[in-house]
Length: 97
Image (cartoon, rainbow, N blue to C red; front, side, top):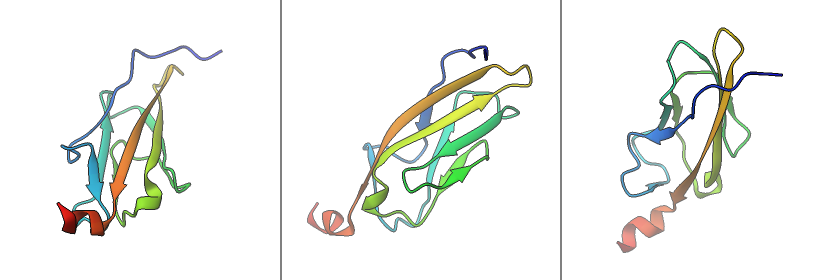
């Protein structure tokens, strides 16, 4: 049985309104409150998996709106998971605001 790490939080440095527009010139950047030296597995709605400590998602489209999750493990085998919902709005929405 794996030991549990302390509570894991996921946050984004460029989602101030809770959403991002498709084809944004900036990638969506997700990171956690975990030590950057831990092992990471980011799972995105489109099936992409990243093992980077900070997940950078570019080429955004509304089909990517869904749950992003991460699993973090330290060198002792302690594991923690976290999830966050991401909303990618269409470019049409940007023209209407």
